[in-house]
Length: 254
Image (tube, rainbow, N blue to C red; front, top):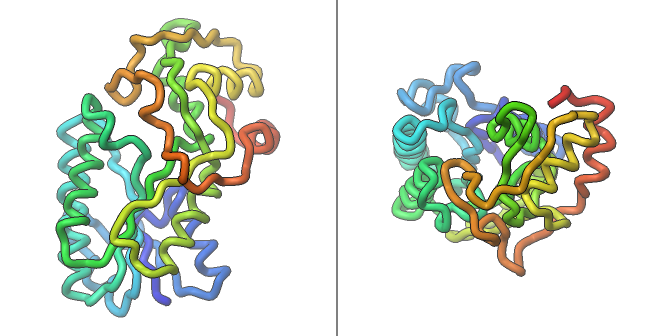
């Protein structure tokens, strides 16, 4: 199949393009660098010609409330319109577990709008809700650091490796449209503060992580299970410990 990956040069997109290519599909990475701009529509018609599936794993360059809403609304509207003209038979989007439960977060509200646009279109679709990526523990720590302390909610999360996210999205992309949502998560449940503390310790980072029930996550207060997928969600295999063993050797420092 010809599968166009919007955001195909990013963390998930680049892994997805590689995996699809290894399985014999024509995977096209579409991004501003390749002349495809989903906000203006530039290049969409050309890259979608003959496409069987479009996978959108793109993300907003800004997480400010108005900017992220504008990004997902405009980009999704333009992609769906171009798909309708091109006759694309399957739209796949990567979203986040808990979007509908975190209405205090401008980012999550924008993702809900994105999902609504997809569901309301006439394009057969599949939405993949993934939990937080292991790769994000460093940026989560940066955003919650005050002085030498990292203040984070003790709410539970079930994070997963970006490589496993890409595999899950790829399986959905080559299958029949679900016209619904599937959830994927990691093999282990952590408290958010403990997850980040474990990652920082593995990297020799001296910051102290403090559990703070009033600490916000993407602007939202967490109670406990908002970021946890349902019991029937697909569980990835890669553990945080095994991922860290590689990241400590090869990855950038927090």
